[in-house]
Length: 192
Image 1 (cartoon, rainbow, N blue to C red):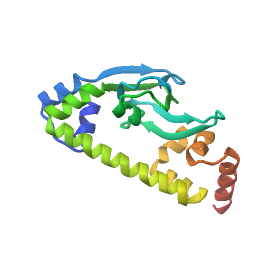
Image 2: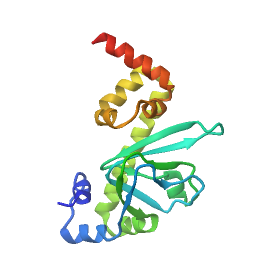
Image 3: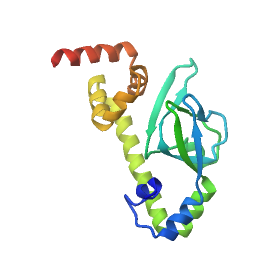
């Protein structure tokens, strides 16, 4: 079964014809490691579903410090959502951390599918709600949890990413320095 269909059918049921119609609105793209899907200040026209690979969504502050908002691996959706839904220029960058294959859909096509297929609209709404809840949990953790707790939550939620990401990127995602994360790794290894 097509991976995208499997993804949709985690939440909704589709006939062969419905899936073929939905799939016809996506375009396949391949990127090399370090390629960009999106640069800040570019108009955002697509949302991306990751077939294969790993990406990071990040912001560069006025001092050129990188702040990672999200990682996206297989079966995840990614874009600059504020810009995508607002039809504005991106404030975020999306870069490939590995060779990556994605399926892209335009805002117009996504809206058309939501209007024409109630089950696609249901899928979209449920995915958005899950995304909002995950973002809220991440923000609350950044505001209230210590480094160790944030690391343990990350490790529990995304164990495969620990093997795929360099420590400096994990540190950026957790909002700490590479040195702080190294001290935490050392402390955790001493407990074993």
